Image 1 (cartoon, protein in one colour):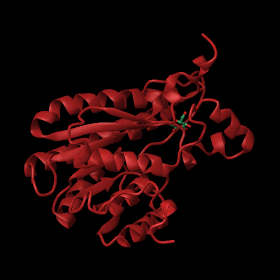
Image 2 (cartoon, protein in one colour):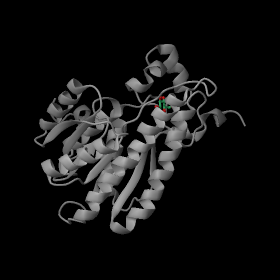
Image 3 (spheres, helix red, strand yellow):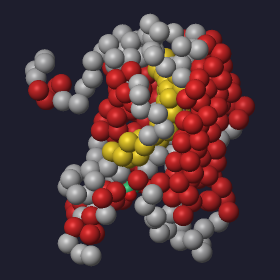
Length: 279
Ligand code: BGC
């Protein structure tokens, strides 16, 4: 039903990001997909980056275009410097500039620390940490070149790093992933400090357990989900839209004074739920 409470739940005004140009890495699935769609719904033109899964990326593009904004898919590996440089250059050519970079692409290669290969370690650091650095760097160069355009946004540009609750929660069996997200926390804060005087806002969203392919094993059976819910005070597994809405808010001028912050969107996972009864 048009305009029903259910339809409107969690959606944002199509005016919020009108005229802004956004790039979302890893936007062909999970959190990235929901974020790219939410940015389009909020009025932004969107580049849908992916490294594999062209069909999915094209479906996301089609959904975004339905909002009456522009979108296209771009294949690039965020850990490859030349590919990131080319991706942002093409966007500047196609859309004129970039206002919002969502450095989202990430992966897991889980193993016990003593079993973890250097390749598993390196892959996760390359994509999750180096990839975010490269994307942030290329976006920031364009923000600096263009400067603030008041009619578009109070900021010269916004960078949103996709972190994780594991930027502060140690995670056995995932030392590569937790280390990469710990690195993202300091990457984000240092960039925020360095670029704020130029009116560039750098912030992070730190999701908890969100229903996406990356953690399917943790929620796809009732037993696994029950186990997972013990770690979530709010007692629900998150949806990709929970994260997408947080990114839209951080990217918008509503949160123009938020600089260098990590917004935990985790149903309380970082509240040490084990201490609800113990201690
Ligand atoms: C990981 C998921 C995990 C969640 C909470 C995320 O960053 O990618 O696999 O379920 O953190 O532990």
